[in-house]
Length: 503
Image (cartoon, rainbow, N blue to C red):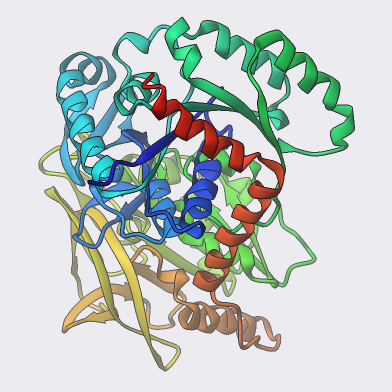
């Protein structure tokens, strides 16, 4: 029977680079011929991934499975927490909604149930794969939470996994955060740490060497690598924290200006990732009407709380600015999932799925009405999209609580085996769909951008790069980069030794 060798990556804080380093090791192990699986016991994220059987997991684990060349399953992320309101989140267990819980209730009432589910998933993966790449969350030194945590050292103990601690030097104070984290660990947990990786380094490594030597001497823990910052890596981000690094201002050197509304409960913002690879496009995430400017393409992305985010759009003045843009410019407006619902006439929530507010008017830019349901739709979808006089075969995934129906004047967008999905205005300047990843379809993305270029009076660009091909290349590029700067062979040796010693 196969028994996987595990390795776990934990960080000194959120966004230290755990997900990207774990993705690299999924690819590295797969390149070496090992059947590899990712694992994150509990993921708090509004970016989702739909498995082939129509279940919902954290997007990072889905992408890591792709990097490993295996099919993603819910065992790779048995618990997904999706914040929906202040101090409240939807708990997704093995890909299906379990219920909405406040933090205190989750910690006190769900702990035993969650622990059992995590053990079961670990057992499945450990017996089906040869390598298991485990990712922690936040920091293992959250001493106020550690007695009932479900994602860091308790999981390392359950899997008997050695741990590599990751520090982000870009934040500053990397040695203090690494040393402080180690000192706050329980003695037995500290022994699990086989080394540290310093991530996102920029500059002259020789200037850092004295610090590396001091750290190893002071802690007795080896530095297993210093990973330089890797720009233009087209691999999906997990946390909205990453959006803080994206511009809010126009880049005059780019021909197409794309603005994405960043409302408080934005979800699945990776839908817009393909535009980052386009040479003529500049992406901005905006939160205020003043930042909106006059974009060529305006995107309303998904939302975990569509009604409250719609109220935010109205109260912030963004709604008025959107109407003005549509009336006075050639802007193209695209709403995806929650953004699509916002573009309709009305959203009703009779069962209190998202908010006590039972009904609110939408932006009334598309002739649809939405009713939020108790049951969530999670499905991989494909169909034929009609746009600019052409038909495009498109694939995507749907994750939504609502059901939308057509009003007078409705023009369908996608034919899904005879079912109409999405909607568009007669002038095709307003588009709405439940299809996440719609922009990942290269032919449609090219047609959309060329239609925008035509309206601006500039020549179209044909033969744009395939996003999926570039992502596969990015996995290899990332793996090669990490192999150059991290002592991978030593890590594999320590993984084997750790299991032999039976720690």
